[in-house]
Amino acid sequence: MPSFTPNSLAPILESAISTRSSFLGRATHARIIKTFQSPLPPFLSNHLISMYSKLDLPNSAQLVLHLTPTRSVVTWTSLISGSVQNGHFSFALYHFFNMRRDNIQPNDFTFPCAFKASASLLLPFVGKQIHAIAVKFGQINDVFVGCSAFDMYSKTGLKQDAQKLFDELPERNVVTWNAYISNAVLYGRYQNAAVAFVELRRAGCEPDSTTFCVFFNACADQLYVDLGRQLHGFVIRSGFEKSVSVLNGLIDFYGKCKEVRLAEMVFGKMENRNAVSWCSMVAACEQNGEEEKACLFFVEGRKEGIEPTDYMVSSVISACAGLAGLELGRSFHALAVKACLEGDIFVGSALVDMYGKCGGIEDSEQAFHEMSERNLVTWNALIGGYAHQGHAEMAVRLFKEMTTEVVPNYVTLVCVLSACGRGGAVELGMEIFGSMRDRRTLSQRNTKVKDKLTILYASIPCE
Image 1 (cartoon, rainbow, N blue to C red):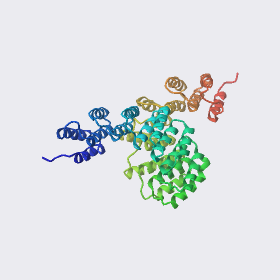
Image 2 (cartoon, rainbow, N blue to C red):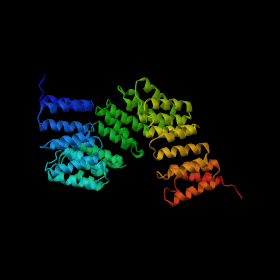
Image 3 (cartoon, rainbow, N blue to C red):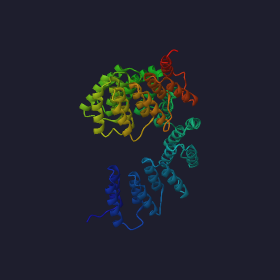
Image 4 (cartoon, helix red, strand yellow):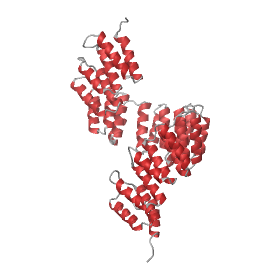
């Protein structure tokens, strides 16, 4: 019978994590209990806690923790990181503060996890407490700890604190700059992102593929299209012209800037393509009114063995809506069902919209009612479908039902006014407009709202 040592059993626990096999993990745990007396060696206890946490078995991880008399920073960090990895952010913070009660000093792996948990729960006050602890132990000057603290402040809306922290960082690497640029893009501060990219270069820091991808998102704003084109040249000079992720970012950038021809050129020159490449190309065509081309790219991608994603399927279904291709849309619906994507909220919303615009209002209703989750886009899609068919009463009834779940926007009003205009329900349309204006849900200055109001007024018979 082979003899087992901690060093021989630890790799098996790591294998259980990588293969997501709780059975292998529990079997190895049983062997450990048979081989070693209680309490278990700390080395193995830490591995067990890490394994159970990362496999989303928090109760088992907690049990091992209680049976571990000697707990180190590794023990607690394993528990905290596993909780964050599986979205248990409250538990992560609970374990972090229990760790402090144990007088264990967090390290440069612990703090980023704690900051991420605070950001995910939108708890800036807790984040500030963790920041103070990081300052106390001199960890805030670590590049990754400082970067995660900056990210926490940015995502919890404390922009001034984030900027102050960033300015005070003694050392910045490409990860720090990427965090700064990505947060600037996320909150629409494209000029800040552009300035940060220039500062990054002045500081002698070399951008990586993430930097380029994030910055292309900033350049997709109409004010920075020329800057994006210059960045394309810089990508080539920097040797990233074969990076799949960077080229995918370029395709997305050109698509958003209505430069489908340039997006196709980049796509055509790619030596290697992945699902994101095909998805970006389908979306670029669909967003720019080239629906037939979007469908062709989708079919070609399937021939290349590309598995459809939620975004790819929702884009091609939207293309069918633009073509009013009901039968083609049905075939893509069948593919979505086969790929188990019909429950996705984006795919579902696209189906509701496509059937409504293609005249299959009953199919649109069925797709709507089969969705387990709905958002504003979903509701607007069905109301828009009723408007397209001139079903004013159905549109208004759905609108009233909608207001009990989500707050309508100007798109909702455009759809309802359109339905009332086509269905001859002028007074009803004006009543709805008045109620939404009183609630300050929208502004009459919106061009589309004004257009629909004009049509509605024109429908009023002259006395």
